Length: 119
Length: 107
Image (cartoon, rainbow over all chains, first blue to last red):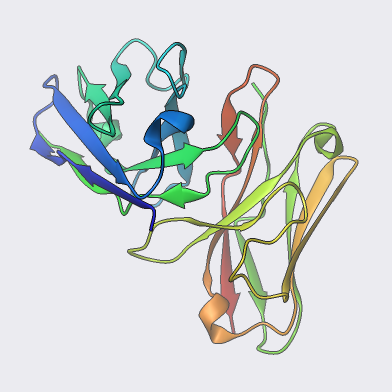
């Protein structure tokens, strides 16, 4: 069965960095675009970034462009999100999710990993 | 940037019909996907491509999309349907965008 398992969250001070990982299993990872989406406390879903199935294209949401970097290793069935220059407003649960194609739905999501930025 | 507008909350009595709207400029020309998220759980797609239902999602859930409004309809609402509901589309710049979410309360 399809599984996406995030890790790497935790408590970090403002200005610091963190790298999140999402390990995939149960499907051909290299066939899918992979995304990161977050949800801050009391807020809605906020799309952050996508990386194409082969890593050839990456796109970012306005809220994180320039600070966060998405990458993937198809040999390890893992997608990453490097979070730099963290701010208090980056406190959120971070989810990875997949789409089969551009325009498609997010058909599987991980359970999320919590990032807390505190001062 | 493309904006999707949802009502913050919708309340409905058990057994009745709930309708959750998602407004956007000419959203009828786009494909709309709907998700629900219950506390502590991952989001789950409940309607994709406007009106298709994944396996395992009850027929009580349906979607429509026309003009400037997409609508998620839940018939015979149950207590277990309480959740936050989100619509989502892809923009012309190939970026996904979510609506602000609607909290469904079953009275």
